[in-house]
Figure 1 (cartoon, rainbow, N blue to C red):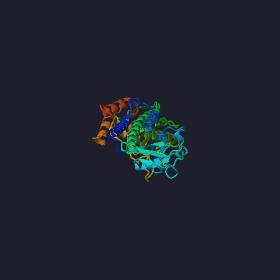
Figure 2 (figure 1 turned 180 degrees about the vertical axis):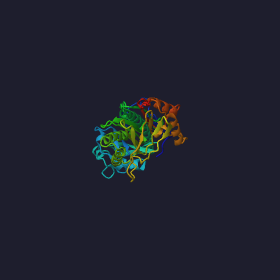
Figure 3 (figure 1 turned 180 degrees about the horizontal axis):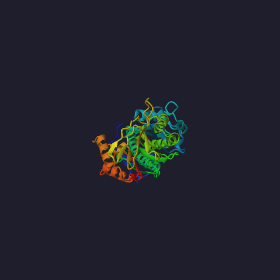
Figure 4 (figure 1 turned 90 degrees about the vertical axis):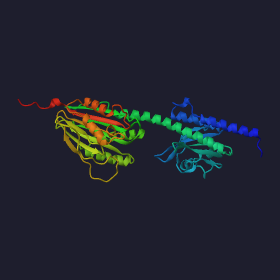
Length: 419
């Protein structure tokens, strides 16, 4: 068949027009729309653009290895009632696994897993992977109740749309997750630290500027015996998942702290719980118990940096306490250990996460030296926090979270000298 120059020109102009419409499928009016509304709006635009009878978005749940339907256009039933599709199985699962478009000109039990499409009389389907930074974040497919021949332009246009939807969804999801992680983090930090005779407590928390909210936390509580429990920890990773794991660890640590006043046993129980129920999680944790009657501090370290101890008789130093494996290391080892130190009148003990002392291009030892220089005995706990944060974070935003807890024993409790 011979195509005239004018007809060819109209086809080219039509393809260019479609491409321009796809390129502008994301506009500024959708910048602050929620994830669900964003996907539904973009899906409506794609379906109308390609004259499809229906269109569906399935997002990838990497932890479960499945594709989850999240939005649909042109269907009279909520697509979320549909079954999840394992990656590598069926139409959508094959698209996600192979990371390439797939065309179906026959829709039956041998080509699709979801019976919904046969029930709807679908005869032709075109699906493409939704890519964001080279990773498959989902699948977009359009469906037709008539037999449809798909051209290379159809596939290209749908792929461009899918990539833009994937990026927009990822950006919107990141905003939602960041807000959720921030709210969760703030809700789980204690609003105030407990009041204990002869002791002052103060704390600080600063989220990382590079990767956002992580899994750093601190906690303080009075035990039934009247002793003081202090926890500080750092979950590996950032974002909502790390914050959720942090919340679970915090709750579990509090529960185990009521069962025993041996810090090592508390961390052993916490490790067993996390290794069983959160097998992919890892964290460093310090748990300490201070006895106001004896002024003794018992400490157990699960991969966590040892505290810094300052007294009026010597400069601040990093305590030489044994460090056991992190929580979730899943390695057979000897039982965890509890070590102790005495907190004399005027002493200051500083607990912290590694974000306080680690910096790119600078050794950890240098950061620890700066921390020791900033911790002074004989001062108020809040003053120690102010000095430490000022000297170690002044003029820079930490790339990682920073948590800091300071315990100071009052100088006024020192026995008076004999006449």
